Length: 410
Image 1 (cartoon, helix red, strand yellow):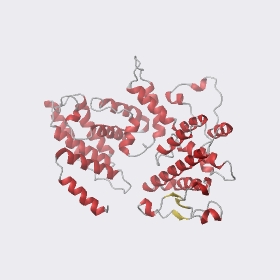
Image 2: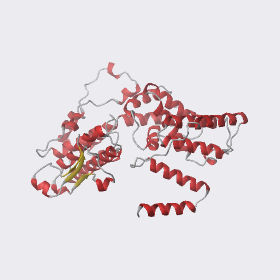
Image 3: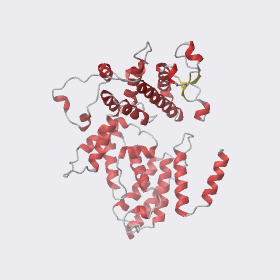
Image 4: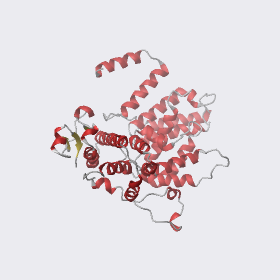
């Protein structure tokens, strides 16, 4: 279907819809377009919007109720500001609307839940509000601000996994996440645990924080049990962006797979990849503010040393090798797509390293013919600093078989 045909189809569908269904579809299209690779974003609403929303809610507080249609429209404007990247306006709009509604200082006429009368995705709007708080609060105060924001909207919608929910509406890894996670875990660690056997929301949030912080080690923990599939799944699900953060599993899993695949040959692994393995493993208890350093403890080995020590006990089958190379290729292509899509020029060299590594460790009989993106598959021109051509990664026989790479080099 061509672009004009798709536009014609959508117009026909929209013309046949009315009311809530039409609004819901338009909102979904705008949200999807704003997260796409084309770089389009909706225009930010007028700066007068915040004052207008505040006057609306002040009047609603005085009488104790408000028209849900008006509240819906203002929430849609808050979402529009969020998608436009105007997080300050989005925060102000949501902050004026949500707390009075959650505390029932303003009644919208609902029988039980407000989503009965609000014609928006309430859960997504709440996640956008918390994300806007995250984006507009200095790192030193961010954990407290995010916690207070979640608590304020508890009567409207619950965030089951706050970090995942925020990333879900942001379309990628949160900025400064590596610095936020320890603060978030410590903030949650100060709360009293539940008195019964049920896991409280705070305990669930803490578990998510610790899990995300230790993400780069989870793949390594799978390996002693010969669970290469589990390690591969972590790498496959990891985002293309966010590779610079400490909790990204690609640091360990991609490099570990490369080492294991290259060990039976004279192939060399990039020093850039190996550098990520020299850091020591992290104790998750450190995130909770526990003073583990004062207790007697064995020195922590580097991740690279652990891989070396584990290798004699590992049983790597031919199918494992093929699966490992396949997920390395997926990770490399996602990294290239993410970096090119956001023009992250400082990371072009890293993306090229991943692509070249895939080609270097693969054997001609493994069927990997192309890794990376070119103009036709990515849908836009590559930046001037990108190099597109035949990969010089091996013998003349390798090149004659058509191995090629579309990668970026710094």
